[in-house]
Length: 87
Image 1 (tube, one colour):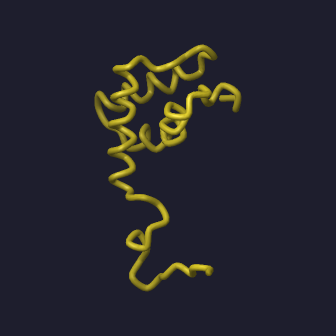
Image 2 (image 1 turned 45 degrees about the horizontal axis):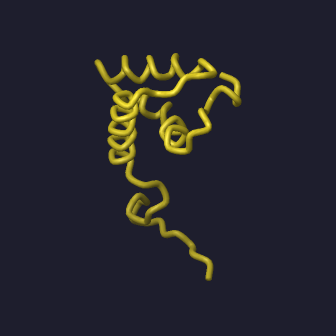
């Protein structure tokens, strides 16, 4: 997929699409089918998700982020690793 077709220009939708590969990788059953259909649809230059699609996309991305946690927090690191913070 070419970069100009990868995102919609809508910040909310683009944020969801940024995480979409991970959603596809983690999804099973109906959710995987939905995620793959969104992946195909987003290739169309004029595509925008419907309100229903957007709601499902938000739920799937939130669940994926919750499973992985927010990247960069200390509690995501092994016990023997600490972040070096600059002043």
